[in-house]
Image 1 (cartoon, rainbow, N blue to C red):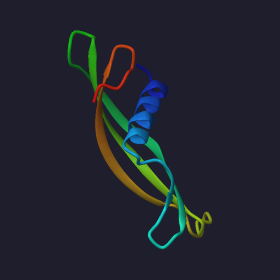
Image 2 (spheres, rainbow, N blue to C red):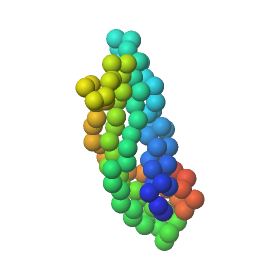
Image 3 (cartoon, one colour):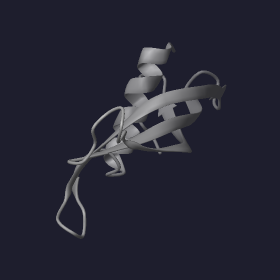
Length: 92
């Protein structure tokens, strides 16, 4: 499993959780949330049938006031995990 595949799996996992994409804050301001994969490890769970991916990622929050470099996006380092089958389908 290469980095591009892991990146796609993490993106799908975060989208399922509702973490990514356009959001509207309580004050009505529009934000856009994206991510950047920082690191990952893959563990074989079930004889090459199931794999657990533990990952660290940078969550980037862009607002209508984001102007780089003077007012860059807000960033947080987060982590998560996902279990996939041998066809990269998300199990949990």
